[in-house]
Length: 127
View: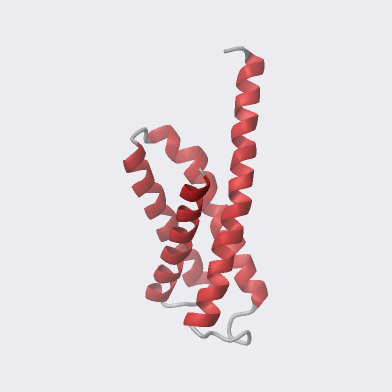
């Protein structure tokens, strides 16, 4: 492959990543709001919209680069890759939610697992 071809292929991968990041942030942040407000019943006074939005962006923005750019360099088996990256994202985002939202680890884990499951399913439906 020529240098120009490699550059084009890399640029297309990165563009696909950016689209996926935007979609992931949208889906996971929407689910975050839904779960926190409708199921956990946490009011605005306890957990602001701004903090929820920041948490959704931070969680996806902190984990998705590893999912797209780090893990593929080390894991070639698709099934193992899927298990590894979804576990990583769920655990990492649980930690972010514990710190940022001051939640118990159980609530943060359930929240993270639901958000990640939603974006995983959406990704599968769209590819």
